[in-house]
Image (cartoon, rainbow, N blue to C red; front, side):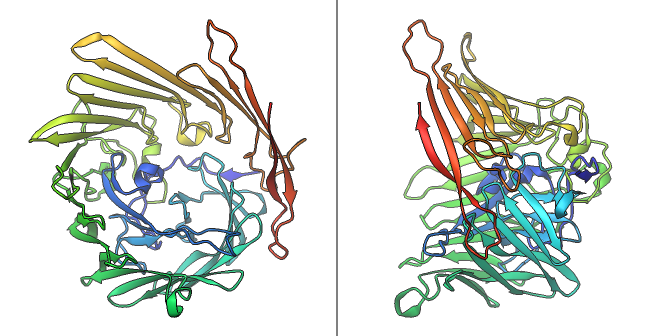
Length: 530
């Protein structure tokens, strides 16, 4: 029996003791738009994500490790990689009960289940399980079969569990070692695999962070690749990231301090020769009154200069809806009781709350195209309107949401689109329109069941249950993740003859590596086209 309080995510929490420290928490940060580089229209934040080569281990038998460096103005700490910068490594803070995954997602644990399972009311789709093994270690089991072991590290009076081992479904693993960075946190120091090969070493000095990939595999025992982060100022901000190229190509960054000790990027120069300027020219995102906090800085203008004489791309952002209300993902304008508890405060409201971001492309000092995005109280995007000259495209997205019910009472698949309608029209000839509709249905695990395309073609998928069946062993973790059959049906037509295509899948097990303590590894056995 799973037990948790119906804590419909209460939006914004101090997570200052986390290495991935943020000054606010919101599920808006768990969307892909916030996990990639650039301006996130949902939050108005300018984020940076730099993906380095994936580390391959155990003679390509896995697991791989994605080395992603990310920057957020909400990260007010130097956790070993420069102020505001972080490596995406899974971590758990027992004090705040905040779990931050290597995927970039962050959730607060607010319930318990059997066998040490920890549950999160904000997590709707069953993509991973989080367990407390004992007083000093935790385990994350992903739907893919990947397992992460987190162990508690103590620095001063701070306690943080860091990923120390990542295990592939086959049982092969890599080991992550962390070392104290200061009196309150640890940082990643090295990664090795089962063969004893060192895949990564990270060194930190007063002025640099050095990332050495395969540190002893290059010429003369030198690193195969070396990335150098240059630190500047007393706060140790990252001013440059030098890449392992002959000409020392690099990213260069300039910042401007804003409210609440936030360091906002104002200028970026890229290795390819382009540059970006970021402006924060308004009052920022207001919090609900009860929060008693300074506004959150947001981007109002983003100018990209591709270089080589090409025209600049000037994009500007406004954050008012059609009624000139300054609503936002924090819940501005709501009379909610603000709590800094790691949950999403906007989820507290039952009102039909929405907020808007309008992105406008400017050429020769005038707006030539606008994209107006509307988000609801669950940070989903039900409406996007793109206008250029007299042409307009409207994309309306419906979700499986129950009106007037709290987030914890919504179906598990409430974040997935059920119907997407795209309409094109000319504003000066409103009778000239064209509309396309795509529909989706899902099971409660987020797996697609029926996808009807705009051209009428229908894709029907069925899945093996967690307990398995003829053609698939049981999943030891109870995940429903293995496709049983996919049927593609032709669109209705006056002309017959198009075939129905059916593909069936069967699976079997292989033993995991001896000593890994993992269950048998479920692998595809056959794929049959009927």
